[in-house]
Image (cartoon, rainbow, N blue to C red; front, side, top):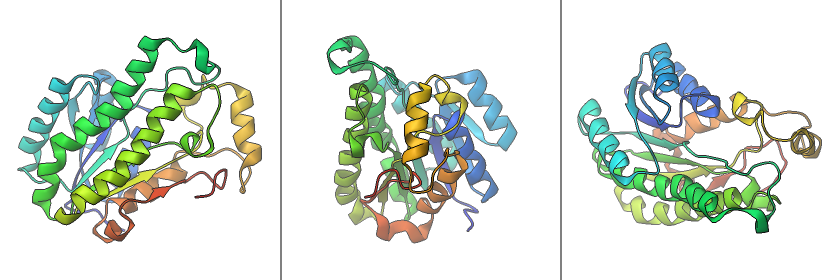
Length: 246
């Protein structure tokens, strides 16, 4: 599989799954633009991969619009792939529905839901111009099985899944494919704060038992931004070693 010559923007690449996705895409030959609110870590990942970096705050519409303009300048107005990985997971690990603070709920929705929509809106003209644009939205299998004590995050990722399906129909006439990947809990520095009981629940409940590493996700994501992935548009792929079946 090669992504040679394909410009791909990935958000949330400072660390964790986003950084691993970027490494996989770079290995496949993609020309990467990485974006994150954490500038120091994000730029370090970009330097490692000889990629461009754009600072972006997904909670700020003006910042997302500026990101789109910068990506247009970096790519000559044509983008082949957008991977909406940037998100926050406030409350993971033990907040019941009736103890979520409204401000926390609103922030999760602003970043995970509205931020995903804003990034698609900013990049859609560039994806259309390439003639083979692909969007991959990172969802979560928590939205497929209804993980408890996690409602603000689950609601946001459920919305991402719904948006994926709607966007697939709206953007399909422009030959832009839109898919969602729904991983389970991964073993990364980004999930170190998740209670051990939740990690154990996943490890023991998977059809293929054990922990799941970011590398289990990255090859799937890389395929979904290829030209050949268009027929999967609108689909949600629970890439979680069989914890949840679609």
